Length: 293
Image 1: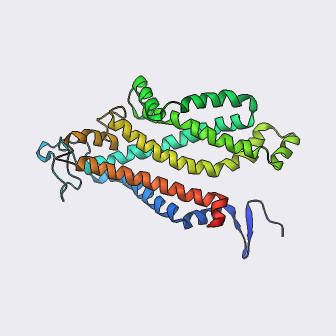
Image 2: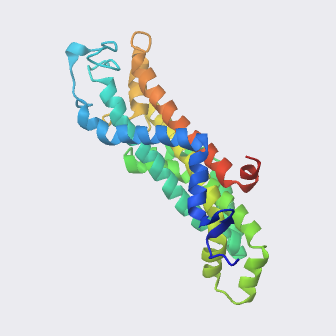
């Protein structure tokens, strides 16, 4: 029986391939639980600040107050509500993580496709990527932030630059494999223009590994942003971010450990949710692992 393009034959008939992939992904516990936790954190970041006190409001009377029914996560050395600051900091971390993942994947996809398909550009692009990968990401990020000033945009750019080479190498390896497939060689022999070959035949094969890679980049970016804030080289201290909150609380760690523990636990849970979801997507989208499961 002839099947329409984009469908697969099953015992009960034919269902859309996208619907089958979505059902498989939702059937994976890692994707389900990681996604639910990540959605919960995103909702808290989106609407939480509207239901909490001002994260920058000073209240010396409540200085270094332990967690209680009045201040759930306690207060810091200036009397600011740690719960409100953690909720506000969730916005910064999620924005940084998603922005870094999207930008690095977009740039890395373009460079990787060009390097893998057009041999003349392979060596120059990959030598630049090798040079970037030879520099530790945290040092490169600190240097870029120091040169251009500490703002949200510069922090995002500083984290994007070390992540691009990893995406380029991933996409290039996929392109080098796919371009040797018979259907790609047939398209080239038929005189199909290079950009059409890349967009129609090669690009779809990069989507699955890029989705998985994007989740790991998102988690890594949130950790790196927190490290930069903890070291004082990230977002300005007047903006509440998880790294800044922990950096300000390290002086009072022995008497007020909640200032570090609360944002640290929030960061750990968010990164854990992203990584668990990435592992689940890898298990679902990798045909070899999916067949075993």
